[in-house]
Image 1 (cartoon, rainbow, N blue to C red):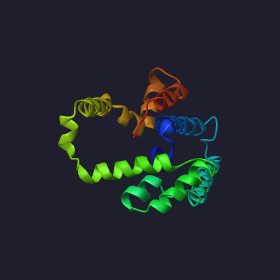
Image 2 (image 1 turned 30 degrees about the horizontal axis):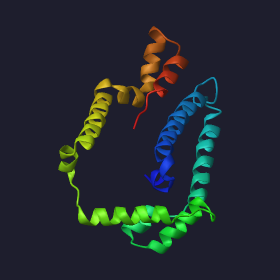
Image 3 (image 1 turned 90 degrees about the vertical axis):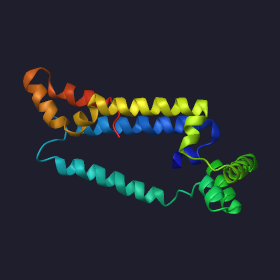
Length: 180
């Protein structure tokens, strides 16, 4: 949500998509690094764990440089000045942020005059179809069994390795399907 709020309007969809792509790639990379042939041995697993620790420390340090979301500051906190400062920080000094502030102002006015509820998703046709698509995809994911495969892939890969496939293929193939 933070990425979609701080991204410029024309890059919001791409920011969310790229974030998900990087997440799936990181899962694949971690599974490859965890293979016994790479770093998944008794001697090397502490180094693999250290990689995760280094990544977490870098994230914590970088998080302190992130401004609060301009949308949050304007709509929730009602602080136009801090929202403008955050936009200038994110877009650069030479960028005109007044158009974005006006969009936030219109969004604030619209949200204060019309309170939405769950049934609005069902009443408005384009929202209803979006909801149906999302529900079908999530229900399909649950019934496909991929969450069980992802959560218990070691046992599954061990079973399939003894029967049909090499372990590397099984572990890597589960990485191509996104999990929550």
